[in-house]
Length: 145
Image 1 (tube, rainbow, N blue to C red):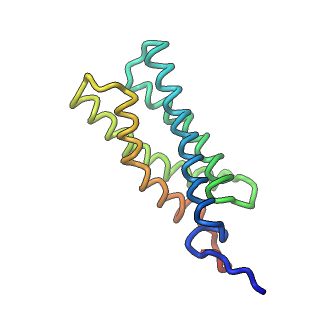
Image 2 (cartoon, helix red, strand yellow):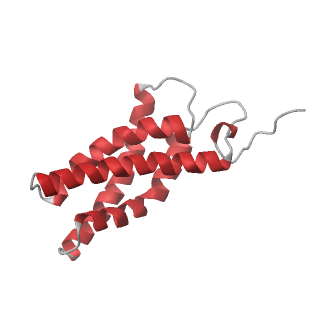
């Protein structure tokens, strides 16, 4: 009996595993972002806007490694080209994230940086998934996509 592959998610993964991989990977990147932001602002006294740039950069690398392993189960070794594709998608998503963050901080200066982070991250999440799914980790050839 042939195994039927799920065409809705990459590599025939079970949709629950794929979704949980996305949540865990994104959650890990979010945690890196939040911890670095908190350390830079609360412990070292940086203003939240430049501190967020450093936090996003570190979260980007963590997210790439997690998503390629757990969300998209990429069977090939990591490559510079894949990282550049991921970086392109991630920086556009980060620009959306950062733009919303800055708007919140400027419009409501009393807003806690972590509250602004949660709202801005939610705004960028859908764009990031679609970019990763259809650009960064898209499998070419075969019947997997």
